[in-house]
Image (cartoon, rainbow, N blue to C red):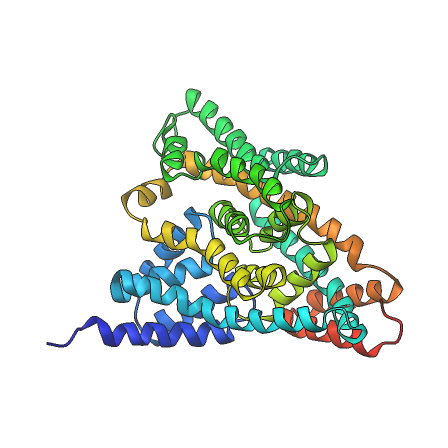
Length: 399
């Protein structure tokens, strides 16, 4: 007797391989493409099912579009489908990042290659700035969240660890919500329900554990070349706590790899950000490029598995608890603080990257032109990055 799951599993793998090979533009674009293909064209889902998958993906840390792909895979072909959809969506970007990592390692210091990267750098900074403005309009809608974001920004500037800022901001907004419920009962679980549920997921209770791992990292790093175990631990930590836009990833990478351990320079991080923009699929595969830069192919594999593994675990655990948390006003309040702090971290890292990107008048001109194009026509970011790289290669003296 044939297995009825097998044909649909092949369809799921084929679709997400194609999507991962061609879907530029970041998580929002990926989610829009999936809706067009899977709801309107293929009819695998209806809009209500798809909206619920997006809501569940937003409840947990990790790459949202990849998590939505996993939910689709599980809906179509069970647990095996969930794993297959996630791997298929990640695999093309992983392969491309390996190739870019090799090219960067072999040719990254050559003048011609370096000029291309110098032209790309200001484009990346402008794109991050655009993301901050777009996210800020939707996430910072009250004086409370704006104040939390400003406090988090001040904390980032004085060197408070990123995880402490994220957790602290969430606790502040949750506390404000809870104090409000003492006089005005609201919807949700009430009392400490939202906070307790979050701790049950390990997101809050995991922060002290992750902090211990972070504190151990610099000790391990002093032993010589970057070892695979701490490399895995760093990316596992980031994948387990990262809420918000993929651009927040770069803020956490800067803290963990540039400041805490000195494994990368600011310039290398900027180059990694640029490579992440050049490839389709999840932005989290920037970890592949960094892992290859630090430890070759084994480092690429370890970093990629580390940063994506929490997403597979969170989606696999999705069930009653997450569905209940989705309706929790306390959990929503906690997330508002986390998102506000995430935006603050993006501002801080954009400022640092800008310092290294704007090295002369030419790079400033590139940034102004790109900003104007984004305001006027909103072209695909890939075309802007290619144009910036071409300017770096062709304009004498740029950078």
